[in-house]
Length: 73
Picture (tube, rainbow, N blue to C red):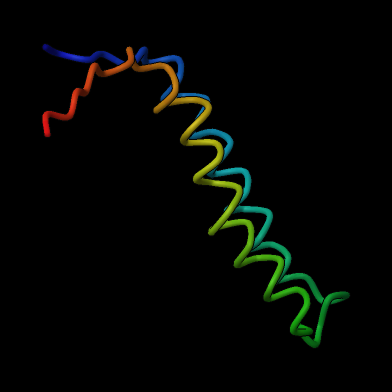
């Protein structure tokens, strides 16, 4: 069985993930956030650890058809 994901879902995922990445990079580059505090660093890591996987789930993984898995004991 081949599962296909629409190209539109991938485009939205890449676009939003790139937007998050660019926001984090620009946060480290602008002068008014200097010096970088630990809270800024934690917020950036949370973006990568939490937000991007949630985007992947809602835009890519959830779109797949459910798999029928049965366990035999």
